[in-house]
Image (cartoon, rainbow, N blue to C red; front, top):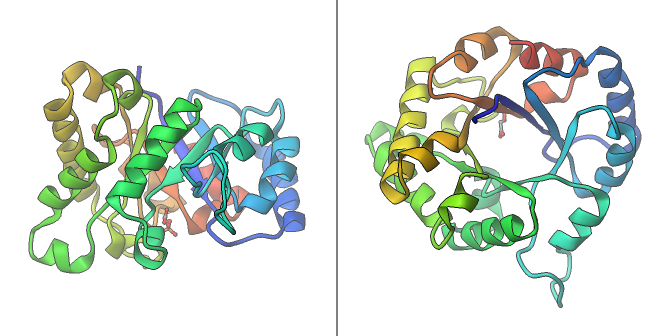
Amino acid sequence: MRYPFVAGNWKMYKTTAEAKAFAKEFKKIYVPSDVRVAIFAPFTQLAALAEEFRGSGIGLGAQNVHYEKEGAYTGEISIPMLTEIGVEYCIVGHSERRQYFNETDETVNLKAKALLAAGITPIICVGEDLYQREHNYQDKLVAEQVANALAGISPEDAAKTVIAYEPIWAIGTGRTATPIQANQMCEVIRRELTKIYDEETADRVVIQYGGSVKPENATEILNMEEIDGALVGGASLEPLKFNEIINF
Ligand code: PGA
């Protein structure tokens, strides 16, 4: 039931004109296959991309959201606002949001619950920093992040989530986890899912690796047993590179 899923996280890159130019280029080379593909763009580019991607098979995601439906939250974006545009996915708990914008396990959990209730697939990001890796805390930390993110979520809903293992020390650094290291951590995640739920549920959750994935290392990483896909930052900004990763 699991599907390969390559997601492009644009972070705070590309204006609307640049996003449209990407879409036009990318649609020329992209061939739909059994690999699910989605672009996670800044909020202001989502409507234009929804238009560009209509009927192309290319999915659309947001990089963050507020968990309340509406309210006095200046500067925030709600789930109904995303639904209206046709957004199908949303990243939750990216390490950059945890690090710079006070995202916590608790807000990750609230966002994941609200997204699932609205039929949007959350990509829940987990991963250790360099200090934690050097002190061998990664298994415990990542298992805890998964358990906290999914607290109070039913097995049926949990099976619909995507989890992205992104070691912080490998994001945007050019340093990649070895395929074996990445696979081991995806195994840790699946074991935790089995512990919280059961084997059947754990088997259904799509687990991505993220952190300096590029055309040169995508094949090796994506062919690992426990790794179902990739969350790609830098290399998703260029249509050719991103397409090469999809065709791993
Ligand atoms: P990167 O980013 O591929 O540029 O390392 C990955 C991510 O942060 O999702």
